[in-house]
Amino acid sequence: MAGLIVIRCRRPGFRRAGLAHPERAEYPAGFFTAAQLAQLRAEPMLEVRELAAGEAAAEAPARPARAAPAPRQRG
Image (cartoon, rainbow, N blue to C red; front, side):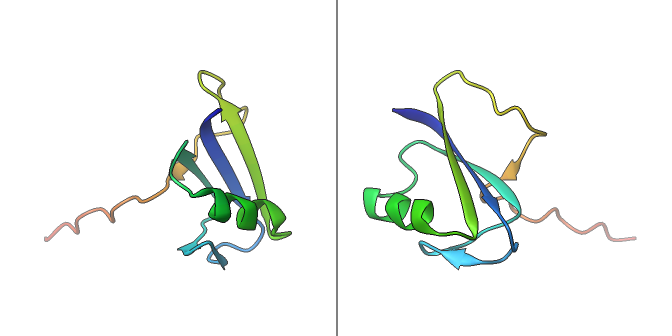
């Protein structure tokens, strides 16, 4: 079973499986249902990689899947 799902999107903001996908994001195993994973894998706009637990992505770190915006500084 995968420990991490890495998704690269050819057009950031593209929507599939209920999400707007950034250029690259990492999701924990179990984040998507089996039906959502099938949709994602079948979509030509997305590249889906499933990494085994402990296997590291060979690329630069991804942005968090659901990062909250940074608070604005008031000056």
